[in-house]
Length: 236
Image 1 (tube, helix red, strand yellow):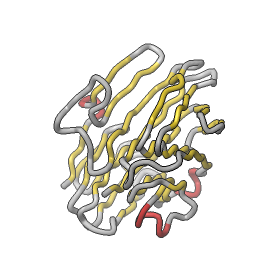
Image 2 (cartoon, helix red, strand yellow; image 1 turned 180 degrees about the vertical axis):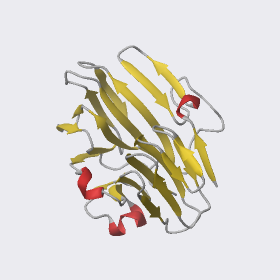
Image 3 (tube, one colour; image 1 turned 60 degrees about the vertical axis):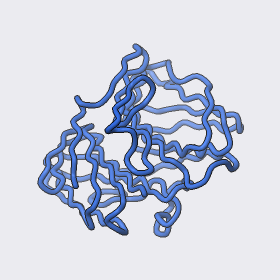
Image 4 (cartoon, one colour; image 1 turned 90 degrees about the horizontal axis):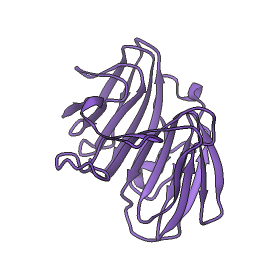
C-alpha cells in the first residue's frame, strides 16, 4: 500500500507567528482517517517567524523529534538543557514522566521544521533531551538513521536514542538517483515526506512536503525527479 497525501490536503492553522500544517489530527484539526500511522502520532510542518516561538509548556509520554529544514531552533527545558539546532540537524526530547520546554526561533529569518511525535513503548521514565549534527553529505544517496530505538536501533550508526521501536531517517538524492528502503518486515508503518524536491515512490509521484503513507511492503524504491531531501519514519 502506498498512499500519497498532498500538502494541500493537510490540516492547517496560521497563527501569524506560526504557519502550521498537520499530517495527522492535531489541536483543532481532526480527521478520523488521519489520527496516527502505527506509532507515529504527529508530523507537523511548521514555519516559525523570526523572534517568535513556543513558550514554556509541558509534555509527557511522547518521543518528540525536531528536524530543522531552514534556520535554527533554540531549545530550553526544565532539566536545565539548552541548545540551538540548525538546518539539517536533529533534536530529540523523550518527555517521559513529564518535562517543561520552550522552542524559539531567535534567528533573523523564518525557521522551518518538521516536528515528529512517536508514541513510546512504555509510559513514564526520566525525561531526556539531545541534539546532533547530521551533515547532508553523509546521507547522499542513502538513508541514514537520525533517531532510533527498540529493535530499530540495532544498526543506528550514532542515531539519537528514542524510547520506541522506530527510526527516523534522512537521505539526500540528486535528480535521477534512487534509493531502496527495506523495513525489517512488511507490517511496519513507513511515512515519507520530502523536505525539498519531487520524487517517485514506486509508481506514485510526490511533491515537496507531501506525505506518503506506506505499509505491507517488503521494500520501497524512491527516485528523485529533482534534487530531493527526504525524511522517513519507520514505526511499528
